[in-house]
Length: 328
Ligand code: LMR
Image (cartoon, rainbow, N blue to C red):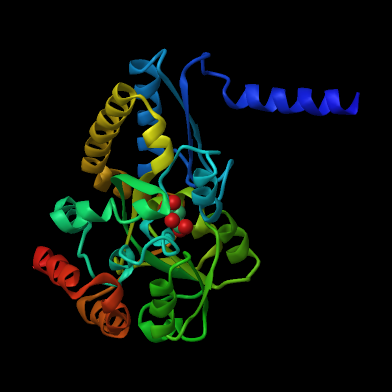
């Protein structure tokens, strides 16, 4: 009886997971970590799901699990290689154990805005990076934008010295560790879903993230304010496993990647709007946003930019040069 119960529980969970899917359809589970409202990734994922489910009816069926409800970013790529999830869109900072090439995007003040990030990604060098993890079993399918990062803490951050001695949550990226050390902070790698609690309980004092993430996770509730530094970027790689892509019928794979590319273009073009909406929503909630004057901002550049030297070998001087030419 115990076995029968266990089996029926498993069957029930499996059925619930694939509730909207018909027999014979390729099930595409898409796990991500952000919210869906006023968030570039959340909105793009929902749009992708709607289009796949409408246009590929009978062939494929997509389910989206937002808010880390299925996996954290630090688990999702392993789960993908196991075949437990088919699609994910972790930030480019979360691929370090697979490739060091994306470290370029974490280097502070490398890109002045998302348009520059986009131009680099669309270049031959950027497109080649999509294939950089094939040997590790992962295929990049598209870049999705989020926005520029801002800094917050439990005290005002105006000059880089204000960060001295503070504990900062960072994504699992050695570049971001080096960046926080460069301003005298003490960085701690942590999953996205744990950041609010860690800020609230004082496990860490501060963090860096985009307006949509600061709004979506309500970090502003447990921080003194946010400083508009625009010092780095958070951008995503929509990724699948090589094995899963190979297992698809060609027409299914082609239709799916065509829809994905169209959604990517449409949502990437609208990303600044979503970013500004989230920023405004933070102000509307009564939270403080601090702007820097030119001299103050230059002090952050001077403090953080020396970090580039440590990672030039990983990312390639030619990629740094290409990114800087785009920025000019
Ligand atoms: C983070 O961990 O801060 C971000 O990568 C979360 C996300 O997916 O935007």
